[in-house]
Amino acid sequence: MRRLLAATAIAATAALGLTACGSTQAASDETSSASSITVTDATGTKVTLDGPAKKVVGTEWNVVEDLETLGVSPAGVADVKGYSAWDSAVPLTGKPEDIGTRGEPSTDTIASIAPDLIVATDDLKDSVVAQLRKIAPTIVVSSAKGSDQLGTTKATLDLIAEATGTTAKAKSVWKGLEDAIADGKEQLTKAGKDGTEVAFADAYVLSNQVTIRPYTGSSLIGTINGELGLQDAWASTDVKGDAAYGLGSTDVEGLTGLPDATAFLYIGNDVDGDDVFAKTLASNAVWKGLPFVQDGDVHRLADGIWMFGGPGSMEAYIDATVAALTK
Image (cartoon, rainbow, N blue to C red; front, side):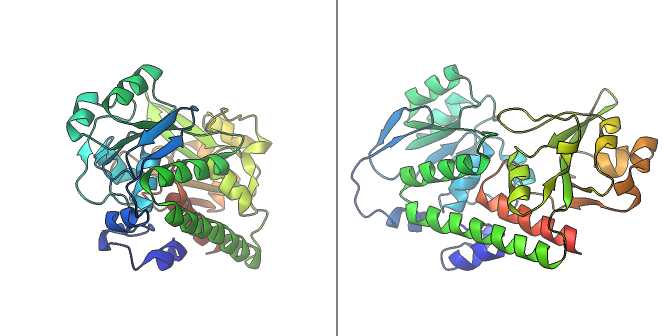
């Protein structure tokens, strides 16, 4: 993230912390004419705008993050409180309206904002997208693709940039991520950590049962790990990731299949709930007996890095992972 900040410090606001965001004015200045813009979204739908969108609503956190990274303060955001807790690596600017939950945004609230553009993901039901298209021009992006997570992330950033007149900024942002990957890989190699077996996961408790959610090699996090020269420790287990997000499911016993030399990484959030790995499992005999637990090779990364985010969160993840593995 340091690299992204350095590249855009002139345009950044004081509130933007770890991200590469300019002002909304800078975003609009990139396109001098007000001529119409036609883009094709991930569903193959052509959407025409009167000009670069300025008042934009985002129904999912990754698109909101991309808007902020491109210097466009969103006018409406799904679950503002949740975003602020889970994606503080790329903070919200301005005072966006809360449009409800990510899965069920309030169409009435969105209509009251009178946006120039709505950005949604294909996780939303088709019926909801149809309602949104009646309110304002709406582009739909792919939420995730296990076969090409980085390509999907870039396509989302580029589509939003095209619709908001910030294509030059998008190129700079993506170059920053590529540089961060290269720099992180170099640091890990110099520290003798290239090829390290890494398992990233999060966890939750339901009905007093702990469920662990592995981020396999086909997840966005797993893809970044691979780009850094790290090995996917989950590949040694029976855990399989879903086709879109690369997420699996297991329990504490399922962790016994991980290689002994695994570095175990996770992100928690004190605002949202307890630290399952540090607290709930603290007295669990299976957890305590795992080699990487006994070796102290369990690392909670910094809060506020959205695991399904855009370049901003991924740069923050790279910095946190490199720091954890080389300390």
